[in-house]
Image (cartoon, rainbow, N blue to C red; front, side, top):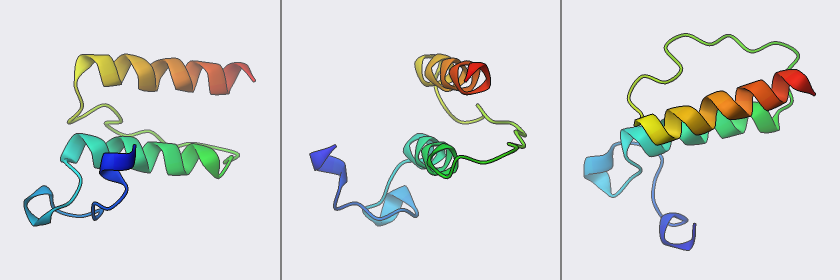
Length: 65
């Protein structure tokens, strides 16, 4: 995480996070907020298969708790 801490959350072309990194960050922020309900529309669009598996596993764990 240290290499990423100085990057901007914005466009990857302006020394910022990539699309995939932004998607994961947004997902993490929403989960940290401990929402009562989560609307998921094209949740895994723009992220690779490994990240998709992690996201879906996290959702399953969240539902189970």
